[in-house]
Length: 398
Figure 1 (tube, rainbow, N blue to C red):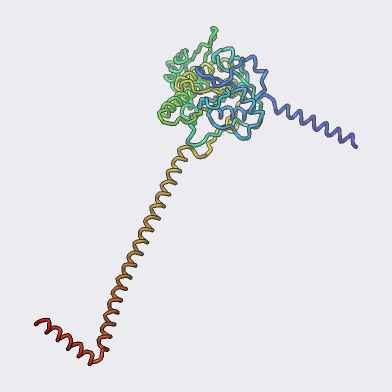
Figure 2 (cartoon, one colour):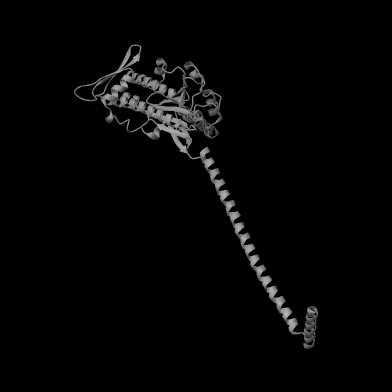
């Protein structure tokens, strides 16, 4: 019986270990891009990626929060804190307070990224797949969120040949239109080393891929304009630019070849490089890029990013509350003083009225007492007093 129990416990422990190993499988990678003129991240070589432990999505969210100048979540473990120290520079007073976070679905391999050499000051980390997400909590009135997933810009039916031609020219490519019908032309982009990528707008997948790239560029330019507007204020908020790119997943589903999807990834990286340069110029280097690569997300709920706003007292709110409290206190003091003045005035008025009444009453009482004494005098005394008074008057007249 005891041997059976031990065997069951051993089987249970082996099953648990296998479950944990399956739980800790790599679900993708995260790519950190440092500033062009300022070091916010610890620089490392791509060959050193195997020397570091993989990170979880929640730890990626904590790293982004710290880069924004916010506090990491209280649920962050000591192991997670040590991983953040391996990624971030140990200077809590020198943070960019701006982050460009993009989730690219359908991609796990970063090998084309390092072959392209588009980002020199960057490194990668493996991400453990799991049920948690990269949670980022932004305080209201202290943070600005710019979404790159604008519905109007990603509406592929609204694309025009002119817009596609401008994007191709901006990326150093070309667009040959079809004179007989719109959105039937051919796009060509140079990928370096003599390689080119051709896309046909007559194909739905190619049109969706280009539409996603154009939407991404529009979102970056919109974030740049919003930053220029908010930079005029006295207090700079934390700025998070986030989005999700599904164009690589669309190419894989349509063409089914890794080679074509790799070309699409290279074109995406070239677009990101130029867009990131725009942000670096607008933010004067005070921004860091974070690119999440993983399995394709079927919906917004499956996304690795979970950004929400939390309400907490801001500096402005505290100042307004303090001013309101001071005004209330001053009004209370004024009311007390006014009440005391009225009460004192009423007491003085009542005192004066009572004093006047007592004076009048005392005068009448004194007169009545004198009159009573005069009337109560004997008649002989009265005549004697009258006679004496008369003789005194006659004597004085002589």
